Image (cartoon, rainbow, N blue to C red):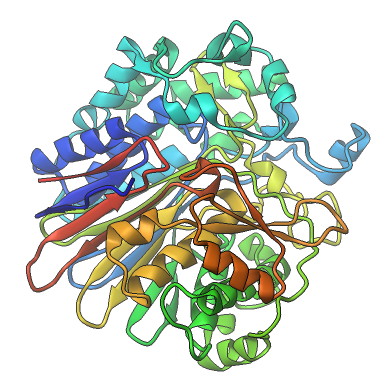
Length: 532
C-alpha cells in the first residue's frame, strides 16, 4: 500500500491529486515553493470541501535556503458580537458545532495566502495571482469529481450539519453524501476566486467579496461584522523550536497546539532504551503525548491570555523534568474527555533552490459550520467551537480572541543538512501522528514512505469518566499490541487499515549531498507527491 517516494529537484505533497498537480505545474512554470503552495491551497479549497476551504484558517512554516525560518499565523479571531453572555442567553452550555452560532470566527486562510505571497515576492517570486488561482477557478467552474474521502468520511453531529440551511442542496445527493466520482460544480465560488484575482486577495476582507460575505453572515445571524473582516490581517510570529540530539524541530506558537508536538518529541528523546518498532518506543510516545496534552490544555490559548511563556516548557531542564515523570513500566491514567474531530489538510513543498514550506489549512470539523454563504459560495468554518463558555477558562470566548487551535505544521532541520517538511491532519490527534512519523523516520531509521505508511495509533478518551482507549489500525503488529497491553494500555483494534481516522500525513526532505528532494504522501488520502 505504501507510495513510492518521489526523488526530484523539487517536489510537492498533498492529500488530493489535483492539488499536487497544481503545485507541480507552478514549480514547472518557475514558481517558488511558496507560490506553489498558494496555488495548491486554492485548488484543494475547491476540491476537498469536507476538509478545508477559503472560509477557514491556515498556518505556515517557511524555511529559506540560508536557514531563516518564518512562521505565519492565518487564524481568525472571534467576531466582535461574540461573547459568553450572548451564548448563555441562547441556552448554550457549550458553543454548538454546526449552524450560524458555530460560525463565529473570521476566516484567515486567504489573508495567509496574501501574507505568504509578500514573502514569496521578497524571495524572488514573480508569478501572477491569475496563474496561481487558475486551476482552482477551473475546477470550481467546470466541475471536479467528489473524492473517496469525502464520500466515506465520518464526522460528528452529522444530522445537525445536514439541517443547516443550504448545506444539503450544495453537498448531498438525495439526502446522502455524494458518491465518489460525482461531478460537482461550484460556480459562485469560481466567481469569488475570479474576483480575488482581479481585485486582489485583500478583497476577501475589505472589498466587494468582503461586503457580500459580511451581508450573508449578518443575514444568518453570526456574530461577525463587516468591520471584523476589514480589520483582519494574518500575522508574522516567532516559531517555537525544540533542540533534539540530531535536529531542531519547528512549529507554531499559541494559539496553535504546536507546543504539544514539540513536547512529545523532546520528552521521548530523553527516555532510554527505545529501539525501532518496539512496544517500549510506542509506550514512550503515548505517555509523552499524555503529558504534552496536559501541558497544552493548561497553557495554550490566545496569546493575550497566556500565563506562561510556551518556550519555557521546551528548555532542556523542563523536558528532563517531564520525561522523568513518565513510568516506562506502566501506562498512566488519561481519563480526560477529548474532542478528536478536526478535518484538515496538510501539504508540503520544496523547490529547486531549497525553499521549504509546511502548510496546513482547515474548516475544523468536516464541512465546518455547514454554513454556505449564498452570494460567494464560501463555506464557513466552525473553529470557534474551540472556545469555552466558562469565564475562568484561558480559552474563554472573547471578542477578537483566537481559540486553542489544532492546526500545527512542522519542520525539522538536521545537523547533517537535511531539511524535513512534515505534517498531518487529524484535529487534536495531530501531535500523536506527527510524533509517530517523525520518530520512525528520524530515530527508528525507517525510509520516508515506510514512516508514513506504517500503522498508527491514537488515544481516544471522548467520554467523561472513561479511561482512554488506544485505538490502532487493523494492520498494526500483533506483537506490538500484546506488548502495549502488558504495559497497561487498553487497546482496541479497528476494522480498517489505512483509515482517514488516523490522519493524512506527508513528508518531504531535501538531501544536501545530492540536492534531491524526496517526497511522499499518505496512502490514507486521495493524493500523493509529484516532482520535477
